[in-house]
Length: 161
Image (tube, rainbow, N blue to C red; front, side, top):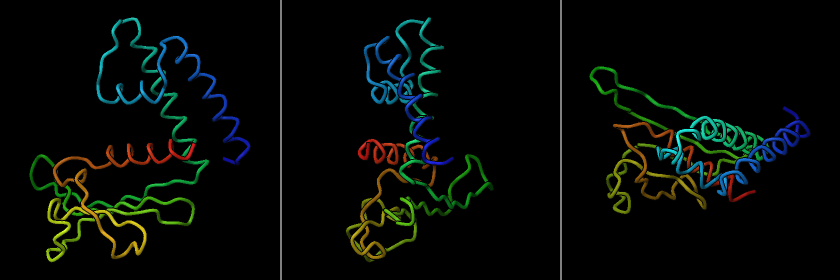
């Protein structure tokens, strides 16, 4: 999608979001956080509205990511030999255009004591991204990591807007 089309789409979505915000007296980002956390609407008549509102907000976030050129590269190796399925290995990279902002991986670094709290899960950050690692408490082998990554990227997009 070209930039002009993206901007038109973003503005149209924002107009729809403003209608919901006025109707329910709540900012979309606050609503969406509670919605994805599973909070139920106070009134059963709001269920359809809330589903539509969440869908519009999610689309708006995706268009913002596209506009800001943010993308997530995912590599996972899954172990299906027993249930529940486990993540055996992973690598997640977050990019903005041609710049790698940071990445997560599960490569063990047993001699790096700063990573012991989440061993082997860690995040590579700037400066010196290849060797600058911090613990990654939100990463796991026994549950999906994608929702956590999406939330982190959404926070990144909101900070840029």
